[in-house]
Length: 496
Image (tube, rainbow, N blue to C red; front, side):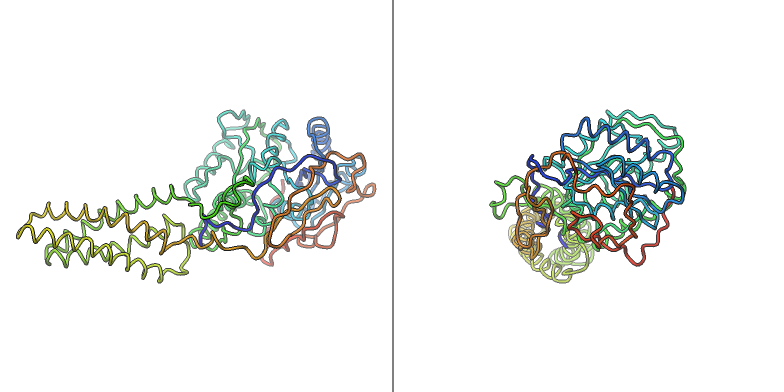
């Protein structure tokens, strides 16, 4: 499976054009569980901020995770009083479950979420979603660990947060700085393809989503935030940390075995519309060259050590053939995984067979060099043999890279057309997003804030939704069917 150069199923990113329509541009989800005290002040403050600062239509969705207090009543009252507020009720706990359910049903092109405590300063909200509206990025996250961030929290939480992110960098090679900040956004066309690949339903949901997106080559924008810790937070730190470490192990194993179909969400080369007609663009050439050189240098050292060992009990030609054979097998395996990003066992035998053909060409070059040396000198010194072999291997290395790239590990996905492309079609007359097979339809105008939003429901009503049952047309404008919760999805989650 190729994960570094496949065109995937996502269309190129586009700036959402400004205009007038009824569909909200931004849907901010607030997942809650037994938050009767904080929910009201949070929603009112967020609503006031968006009314004053956000230039487009928006929606605030309260996602109630099986609360047992008066949180559903508070959400219903807010929905009745504020036209831009709606609520969903889930009968199972889990922040990740709530986000996946609501995001999957939303018709807004930009989806976001934030914690109910509003620890993150709201002035970062517009910078968070702006790169997604402009088409520059696929996901955006608030970062408390950026240099320009200003954070107020205790030493214990600071240590846990930094340790967790160090674990992600060391084990999953994550490059984003803060996986746990409850302040994130994603483009809806990306969410439609990415969310079904995320298994976690609890607190690890964020991390898993970011790791998969980053490994698939999606662009993640980071926003430095001002953040003040909530001293009344009821997050179970020990249980959450344990679940997160299990999630790290599961995702790391999936990445190592190649079981994640990352090529499904890869972006095509060139998000600029002018780049879409470019054919046969080399993809990842610089990275492949670096990886090939590193593998080649280690393989050469390995080869020279083997040659010196085999030379103790055999002639130069035999020692060269044996050393080159062993090192060629190791070299092909290393380049297959590290340089060209091919994961899994599929095609491994064929790749090794083709690698042996390349080995044969290298053997001819090196053996010919040794034969020429022996013809010139009847008893050449061992150091001279090594020097000749190094020079011959340099020439063979260049040829090996070209053959690997063009024949053994070709970019077959680059010219393959996806049978069905998940696309976002949007126009003023029909402000919904539909799946368009085989091509990309341009999006319509970006909706402004409507005077009478079409999504407002009856006063005091709250939509009751069981996890995995949002495909019944709960939202009037929804055109995306919610992905059913998996049968093994029994994570009880943890109360806020």
